[in-house]
Length: 402
Image (tube, rainbow, N blue to C red; front, side):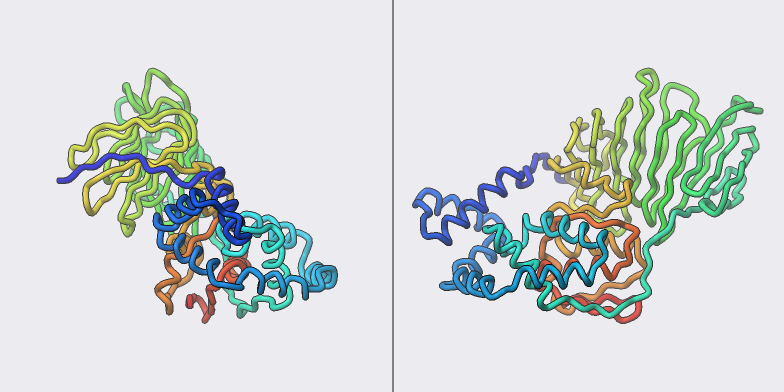
């Protein structure tokens, strides 16, 4: 088994600003020799960077864009845009455009050209055939210790386990209240399964809050006894806000390793079809241990992600924006320089869709921005087309990307 431990730095906001400055200087022919070397080092680090630099280096490209910009009747275009879109959508559109500006080709080097991109979108609006693809819902299945299956999220009810534990089932969450226990010795185990196009929340007996994403399953005791509080993520993605208890560590078992905490907020993603198991820390401190392949124990701090490679049995720690990773718990998709394949993998779990790539190169195009999870998928597809050269076609629940 091979083990490698390294920390990867993602491009920071300050670094992105620096690259935009260098691109601006290049286009204005005011870039110095040292700055030119810096820019080309950045381009060589990633194929998409080199592709962007090549496009911007085409003689006359910048002047042509500026000439087209001068031909736009901005007041009229904006008037038409406001007339055709609701106030909420206009607000979200402006917000998303600013988010996407970090990676959109034109917006990288000029604020005015970022606005030109918006105006161009108004002059030639993207039209995607309306679909009946609706977002997911807050539902799940609860499996009691005796095998009985309870549908969650369909109404308010109280359930009683055979040991006396009361379980409150409401529209968005299920809450465990371990009162009046009939049997102190036996600890019963329950399981929650969240299917495709669903999500749900769970409050454990110690007050720990749990968010369970689509196509996920978690197994847990109805109450905690002994020196530790232990649960198991069987598959999928689960976010925890562990109740603080310094005398009883909170331990999460995953198919690849264990995560040990005292009281903190963290996210675990371990979908079976994914090549990686990712543990992301928002606040507090966690230790990843008992990893497959006898890899060393690793402590991670806020805005770090422990990435375990299931195929090669190796691990690395990546600096990330943890708020983006757990945005799904707050009702958003938030993408931080993620490629289209990663984005549509998340959309497939939430929407009932199948995705086909007519042009495989599109899989690697990167995007940054956020979108509500409870929006009709048409709006999301339109936004992707607005800020890229990607063409998307819908045929029922089939999404074709070209």
